[in-house]
Length: 419
Image (cartoon, rainbow, N blue to C red; front, side):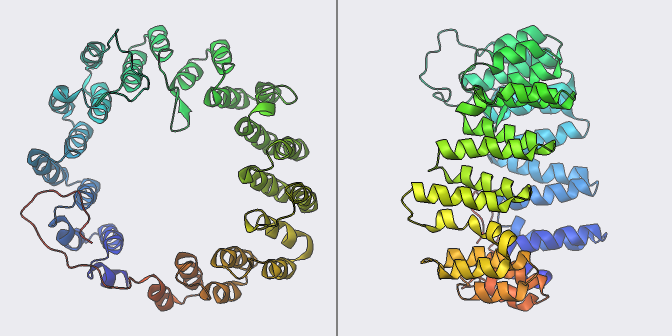
């Protein structure tokens, strides 16, 4: 079935089928499956083909198909090409290609990574230092095109840390405007790596440094200092009392170490203080369920519902279903869900089906979802596959109209998918 759909213009089927063929040693057949997509010039298909070739050890071919796109001017090809070179013994060449593009944030990041392999950290650092502007006075961290100041400082700090200049790296990171990127704080991670706990503690104590607080707690937990980790968050008067995110991290920490009652108390306090934040209520409900006290979770949700005026909206009600099922059984949960004013909606069907499927009643879950099949197509298809009804699952997921024909182009790259 996957092979059939791959030939009909279904990209994800084509990619999956090519990977399977490659694993079977049928590399030529795998390349042939992707060839029509690559021929459209679509960059995603080019990257996928290059990754397969690299995985098969056909490095020169992988390099070649990225090189010709780079020379054609694709904006993402230079990074892919140079990283590929660096992974396969040509880091010096890759570094030289990246040097003229150091004002681009993405390519500057690649340059710093490649510099480590090429042994050219000092050259990379000199390039970055030359771009630090003492007179820079933007209102935000990404005011400038290209390499923004925060990224520049972070990359230079990475280089200095590799060179053993830890104090300089720390000083650089203290100059950033935005301290957290992708839920990590580079300075906190650096201090933790070098065992500078007191500096990390002082840094984490500053307002707005949630990720540093979390990293300090992680470090202490890893060192078997559970009480120290708990103390980082505090309880009555610490960050956990003021910040729901810190409270959540504390609750998870307590639960991991068998102190579920304390964990629930932490999240209950947050739910009382922020009873309009559904994610906190959801976290509390899951914690009560995991700790084997679903009745407590239900009682708290009842109290909050009354405080909110007893509107009974579905956004609050659906959290009850696993708790109801744990207390009175799945049938009780389903019955209450169906009796709800919104119990016949497509979004209610999704939660009812999840409850049934979790109890092994997949056929019933499918029947519920089929009443709203277009709105719940992925969940419905998943359960149909579990039941071995693959043809029905395919029919649910099939495009209403077939994909557009794949059209080869003389252009070597394209931003748009061929469908």
